Image (cartoon, helix red, strand yellow):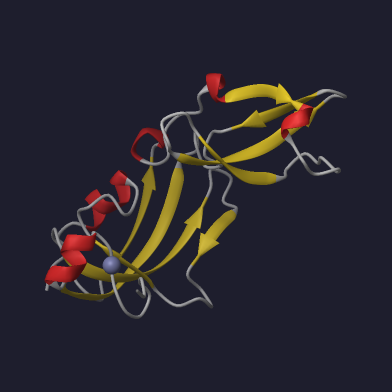
Length: 160
Ligand code: ZN
């Protein structure tokens, strides 16, 4: 059965960055399972998966605008040190913060001074061309409940 909107897809993948460094992989973790066509994966990868069948393999390099977007310099900001309750501040620390419109973002500390901390709200993979090696493992119809919820239930998915 080919991949189209509202199919539940299982795939094995290896993600490498621009310099060939492995960033993420399903190896040792089992396949990634997602609901196709509802924005669960980056747009460039869903587009490439459309119409593929179980057993199909492919390799694709996706430009930043079809992946996690370009880096936005305005998303690097200085905030008062007093906003951080923890005693130790280190470059590379990540934490969740809520934007004024209620979105959760992962912020990364990229620098600090005595009274100020510089945080970067860009996605860690923003600005990067991403290469995926993919094998489609399984394709099935989504249940009505999965379509209503917008995500997969059961193995590899949500448990309520
Ligand atoms: Zn659900």
